[in-house]
Amino acid sequence: MIPMNFTPTPDLLAGRVILITGAGSGLGRALALESARAGAMVILSGRNLRKLEQVYDEVRAQGSPQPAIATLDLAAATALDYDNLAATIGSEFGKLDGVVHAAALLGDRTPLEQYDVPMWCRVLHVNLTAPFILTQVLLANLRKSADASVIFVSSGVVKNPRPFWGAYAVAKSGLEAVRSMLSQELEGEANIRINSVNPGRMRTAMRAAAYPAEDPNTVPTPASVSGPFLYLLSAQSRGIDGQYIEAQ
Ligand SMILES: NC(=O)c1ccc[n+]([C@@H]2O[C@H](COP(=O)([O-])OP(=O)(O)OC[C@H]3O[C@@H](n4cnc5c(N)ncnc54)[C@H](OP(=O)(O)O)[C@@H]3O)[C@@H](O)[C@H]2O)c1
Figure (cartoon, rainbow, N blue to C red):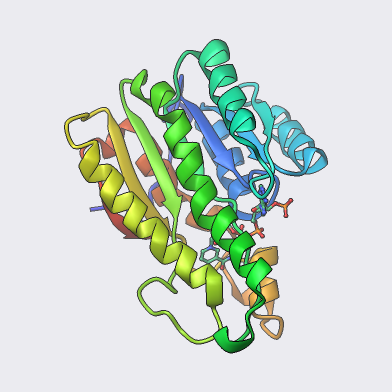
């Protein structure tokens, strides 16, 4: 059972090294701030250095442990970029205790008949292939943790693939297959947990792009859904593995 109104203590994630993609905005930024507030050393990953530096400053301003910045454009990253990131984490931290794959692209909201094929490929790459590659290259660092937690960020379109969600829905469904397979493949390694969390609707740029007519003030903030994520990143959730979890 995941406690929905989980309130982290200031030392919940003390000593843990957690990489968060899409950390420059939206859910990724909120989880970076909340994880750091709970004591984690956060590796802020994203494609926009300026945004990551702003979050870096916010983390420092709240008195949390010093974060690190890892710029990585998931649409363009090469095998060398991934390998370099894994090697740097290994040499700087010697382990990795958590990964949250928050980065994603919405893509087009059009019928499949008209869906732009290059956009299809980009969305599948950023939302599905890139988190797969990143997890694959980071496994060696995750294995060095006593209790590592990988979280794929899911969506309501997985259970209910409504019209016009295109490559986004396909990619998020694919992530669930990755989550399930990987968790089973690592069954013998109790120190690595693989789960996915559907955060539900959140007041972010992606939500505004998907629902332009909606009043953002009626939508929960990303920080307000952070509880289940922090719980899963902490030792308190040991034993929870291979699950799809709804944060709202
Ligand atoms: N908002 C919702 O209602 C909702 C509901 C269900 C699930 N989700 C999921 O929640 C997660 C966070 O989304 P959000 O709502 O916070 O949206 P968001 O504010 O648009 O954040 C998406 C993040 O992904 C990053 N990103 C996009 N393309 C990238 C690339 N090529 N390389 C690296 N980073 C890239 C963005 O970077 P830039 O800042 O540089 O653009 C941004 O930081 C996503 O996985 C989304 O699918 C959201």
